[in-house]
Amino acid sequence: MGRSSARLRQATKADVAEVVAWYRHEAPEQVRRFREDLRQALETIEAHPYLCPERLGPVQLHAMRVFPYGIWYVVDEKTETVQVLAILHFKRDPATVAQRLGDGVPGP
Image (tube, rainbow, N blue to C red; front, top):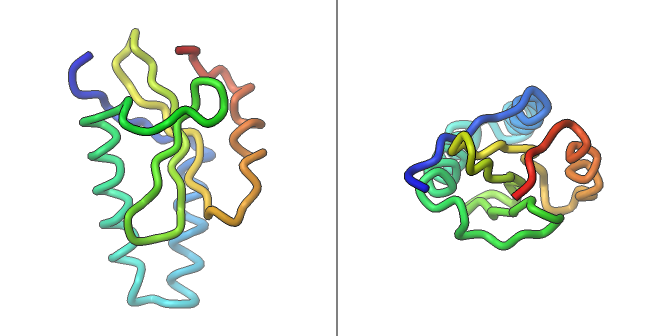
């Protein structure tokens, strides 16, 4: 499998919007830094999709470098894409990811 392409689902885009809104309100100087950390994390996942451990069946977890968030994703080898299921703070219950598994997530 060559370099993968990461695709954020609507729910994942909502996760990002929620985080950005929180930082914009609580620490506006961190918004740009969060977005850069997220961009770098997604690039790493795209370049090395199997680098991170599986946590829930085929779902893998990548920890962002600077911020306390995990990127939950699954690799679809047929389409050579990475489906990003959730971007969640590590204090949040990962049951959100398990719920999103039922939304047509491809298997290994």
